[in-house]
Length: 301
Image 1 (spheres, helix red, strand yellow):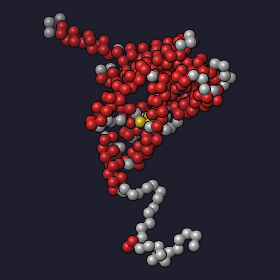
Image 2 (cartoon, rainbow, N blue to C red):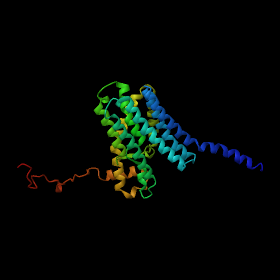
Image 3 (tube, rainbow, N blue to C red):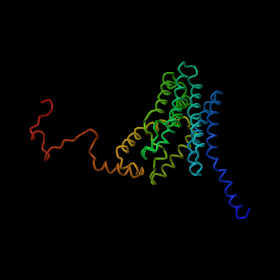
Image 4 (cartoon, one colour):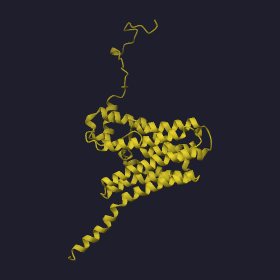
């Protein structure tokens, strides 16, 4: 072995170690999800919620870290999918059942429905990833509520109980309806915008950083209120995602454009038709003549 080959081996060692970092984060997420069940059984729901939130953060980072390190693999994708089923399907279902529905006859049925819907949603997601016939713009939208968002939405019931105590939000009918509604959102066909597809204008970067600072402070001071606010804010974005997806689908010429270029095209269309509303046709009077001069009768006369 020559001396010139020694530096190459030295530089390869840290790269091999970094390649297992994404999978290590996924394994940690699985451990966090399973440990949340243990704390729920021990009567410590606040720790159970914190661990599921930690699993959601790790789930959001492992894929990005894999792309940055060029460490994407088929095995890593399969581990990530199984981790999502455990962290956002099984763990939240068991936590909600233990803390809110253990005494309700229909409790186990609705949490089973939720866990099954999470698995079905993940299976559909993996299938759509392998579909090369879909237009490019579909990569910017989830089909149905993503599994991490579904888990946080489900745990909103527990956050409300820990923050406000017992109330109508912990009643059997509302809890079961909330779980069923979340399950249906997971398997629905509603388009939901992916976070990485949202572009922040440069002049709003300082505002975004300030908001992140407020969120970080609220996570320590008012964690349960923050969870509820995030759920409401996320649900409020759904109509905008539907509107955006429908507009892009109706304009094939914009399928390959960046989000910034699409927004500019939409603004140009609105400026070109400022007074036009969908489904409403404006009737203009010739030369500004009134109804009387046109010999038209008003309704009811």
